[in-house]
Image (cartoon, rainbow, N blue to C red; front, side, top):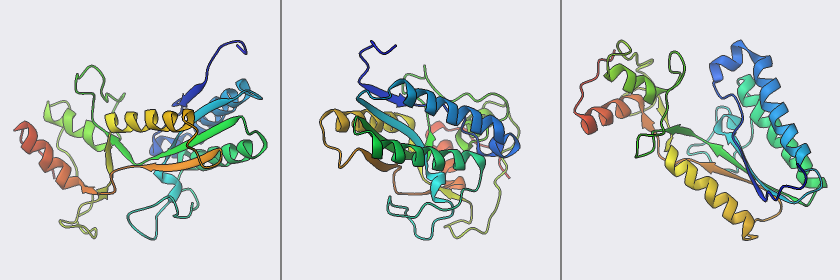
Length: 221
């Protein structure tokens, strides 16, 4: 409705599982692009602050760690990553021709956790594709043993390392992005920010942290 007084949009409407995107690429291209194009079309010619959910997958396998916003965008390794790369290209091109658009693209690293109230949390449909819900479901007996893949990565004890960001911190990042737009603090009308901690945690470190904080012994191999 062009008469609605909407000054800010946070665009979360996307499929997000890397493995599923490889198996069902058209599902990802259809949903992730159409949702973005429909939103941009709805605000054509109108001023709007727009925060986009992007991903660290746009960096591919980076050459230097930790990854900064100056790292090059590499060829996508999945249809999911490709949708994020192309979506950012669309935003750049729209920003160039329409100064009423104010875009901030937040490149998430690995969101984990739940709200402190436990009213909102991560409960994926089917077998979890992410570490933390697999751990919690294994802990309550819903899943079997946790399988840790790889013991020879270049990490302290050999398991894979990732940068995990708590979902509440991620939520605060979106509020900060909107405030930056509303307070006219942007440098130009398209900006990119990584949203992570800058510190990696290995799979086994996450497993040990869960055991220490809950007192529950996990079964893993």
